[in-house]
Image 1 (tube, one colour):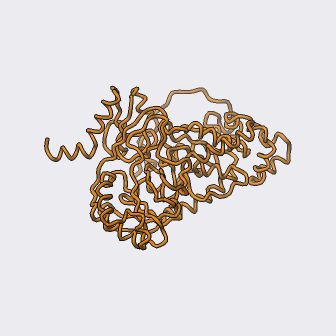
Image 2 (cartoon, helix red, strand yellow; image 1 turned 90 degrees about the horizontal axis):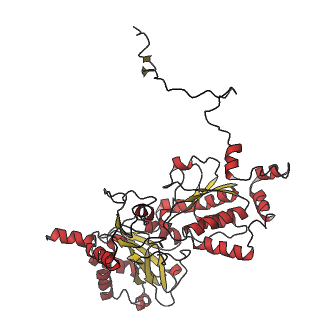
Image 3 (tube, one colour; image 1 turned 135 degrees about the vertical axis):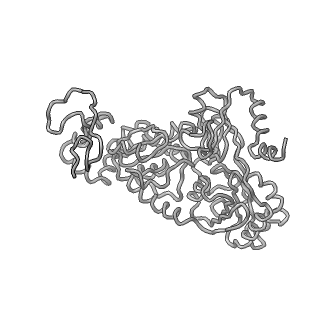
Length: 454
């Protein structure tokens, strides 16, 4: 076997894949590649490529999924999965020197958490060895006028259904000790909390994990650099800062909405069904009507079919959320933002979160305090009237004028002003169906059946 083929086997971890399949005795295995890779095996994922596509795998009754490329490592619902991140070029020597220099310049942070893009995780052992030679990994390094470097690793290389995923319940960064988030895990020095750390990302600046981490820890000191140790940039990208400011606006729009669409953006992440029910219960307690939508990958064209919906709540993999929803007819928010918008008196969230944990905890707490979500019907209309003046005007007319229809289907049938083309606007009888006839041929400037103009 040539040196090139040996490198190819290592890049795609073929030996590890074979060992994983043989040890478990799987006979039907699906291979999932990133969407941008030209392949014919689960390449067109049902939702997004960082999540395990259990839907497509179950179509062939697969026993497991071998997932290639970046992965969110979220907890799985039905099938086990083995993850192959691939290998991208990196220079551990240059990275160690650049990171150590950056850590020395940090005076206020006790630790610098370094996260390598998943295709670069193969370089962690060599990078760790070189940093240890410079004493940058020693907690005493911080007492010498710099931040101790903490290297993050992959949270898992394979997952079983129902096992813990790679995110804390609400992906907060106030924990100490062992922290797990966005597919990574790291151990903080004693007495150091994640919220006080500085952060450094090595690799592609467009990786989904980086966006998730920067949004969750937007107030921290961030730095990014490429895999060769060059191009160090400090702070958040301007577009991310604008997106964060817009999230606050979207929460206020969701608070004033009366009709909510719950978009199911995953069928593989464990707990998605409970999260959907929790969002529905929160909306019902806030006096809002809900629709549950399963449309595959959300797009502006698909969601535009529901013009009555004033805000969408996307229940999806944490790395599959739509941050910029300007092209959509209605704004799209996360379950955590829905918890803030639909809970009366809820304080503003300290950080952006795409996890289910906070919603599930709040729903369980409300269910324990009040098992019957319809029994507090007096509180929900009061919140609705406070944020929806139109509802207040309707409520003054009669008791039944606020909600004359009971189900979503009745609402679509009775409230939609557009009825389609089956009835002429003049009110005439519906014409019987007829065969399609050939139309005119040519352009408006001169059809084929018109005499030529000289």
